[in-house]
Length: 148
Image (tube, rainbow, N blue to C red; front, side, top):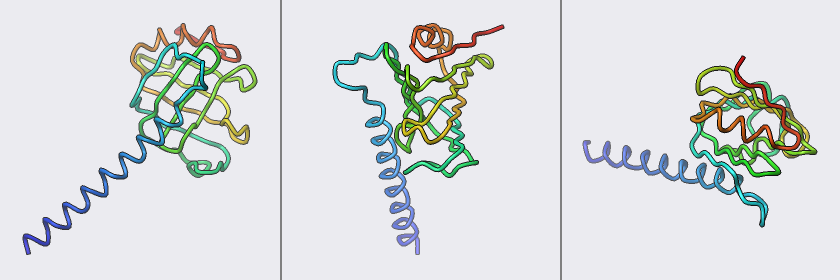
């Protein structure tokens, strides 16, 4: 009986580890910038809630939200927010977006899914939020609202 319980428990732990590794791999692959475009800032495993208003391939269902960790990458041309669903949001000159400070360590990013078919809102718990907002203020297509 105890051996059966340990086998089942071990299998559940193994499945969980594989699922976490797959989510992390998808997030890392979605955060890759185009060749020759160096990153200015990067934050991994940022706690976030992501809201989306329309169905996109491989994404969460519309109207609800996905809670988890995201990778945030900023270059001189774009801001990329990658989640376990892939590239969830991108802010650039042709896909404008907004970043708002909403409290200590709290930033909201609103913009468009890279497909252009859905509006996305991400509520982040971000260390060094002032540095991120300062860097994003120089990004074409980004509107930044800082502390009052």
